[in-house]
Image (cartoon, rainbow, N blue to C red; front, side, top):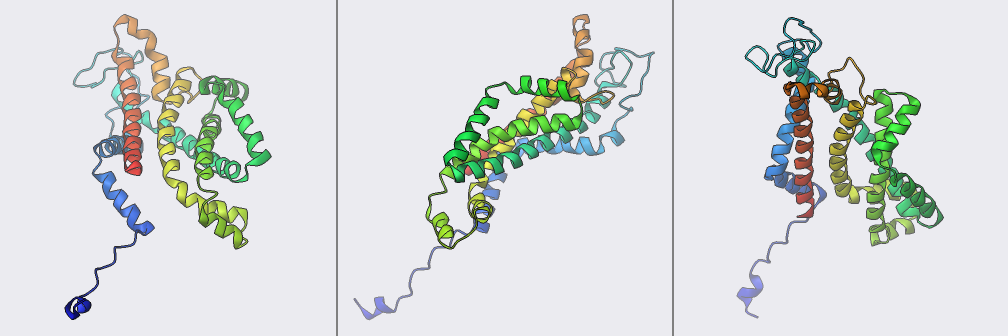
Length: 295
């Protein structure tokens, strides 16, 4: 080898993929994802409406005008009025508040319960895993809406009850996803090294394993949020969810759907479109997150 070659500088070492660098790259990919951006814009719009809606709507959500009942959409009432003369546009905007409190809280509860359940069962295996898995499968055999109706009928309808019922039900589903992820991690070298160091199981689960399974948990959370919105709206429609006098979307559809036969379509359509847009926004966001994680 020539002296010139020997004196030439060595090639630069490749940059290490640190966790901060990985998250920065994935954040940039998210911002370039059209489904994620569109979904987030829809979600941000409805969150802003839930926060500032009562102060920007042209009428109070519960203000009645018996001289202008069931008027079609017009310049003074953009979405028309209902049978009590209440402005539908104002009620759609203000009605976003309750569902955007109940559904995310139920999803958060389900994620927390499911994460702990999945970590414990996936790491412990053996009898603990078998018993818990059989119990989870028994509950999941029942449709969520039927299970929620039974529990809420027994305990009474309230926002807190809806949050707990949906959250615990979703916790079982999230738990299965987390358990599968833990099973793929528990036999890897870094877990074996933690065991050799004599680390406690809680440390191994929450410090070693949990950070490595956050991506599937994040995807599952966004997907569950869409289901939670639809479930809350369905329970409200059945009279078992958010209660009057809230202008909640599902409850408002329940109060007005009988008017469709008389041609008063606007008393239902705009609430249904609001629910649909929010669910679509969540699903687009979830698709964007999933595509970046799979990349």
